[in-house]
Length: 294
Image (cartoon, rainbow, N blue to C red):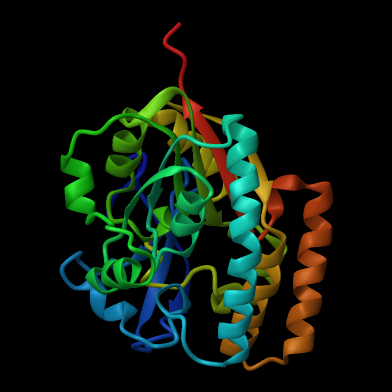
């Protein structure tokens, strides 16, 4: 990786090395772009090989089974967040229904909830396994990325990327396509980990938000704003995700061999610091719209 995949700048600087704690135990570098402040996993597994890094029963976004503390925490938070996401969508679109596109739908809980609330929902996921589960559990016929990227579609009132963009090999193509599928007054909501958060600094190369090599691109608020602008999108604001600081800290503490109580304290302090510096939450939702043509 000689140039930044987002802005094309060079050289990239190695800032840390991180371990794949979930599947292989392999070690990857985290490299940083000096121009746009983005970070990237190096080397990045090719698209045709990336699936093997998701082959774990402990990968929570693809699992609804197991009774581990982390699995229970993940599913509890997901249940709470589905309702919050619906309220954010209604707030930013100023609509109670409409056309919604969910990129990276996973097993379909959020998409099914929005459909049951009256929205016309289209969903996309790269995993054939989870597309099948979304179909069998919720009757959702999720598209593969190639089907979505190559298809024409009526525009959407809202397009969501809930912790999805960091997994994508070509995020610019996805955002360009999303922008072209967005109504003139439509809204794009993108949830991402934030490596400038307090918990990321505490845990360093054990920070679960890196999740290498499943997370390919690592965004800071400044790099995300620049990237959105380069895709002819305007960042309208951010929303901090309070629960993520606790969940990510619990996972990070497990990777480092620390206790859960200390992790919960770190999550609390991370959120407390973010109250005065709003862009320092462990995860952020970026609210974006198409640039005006005026």
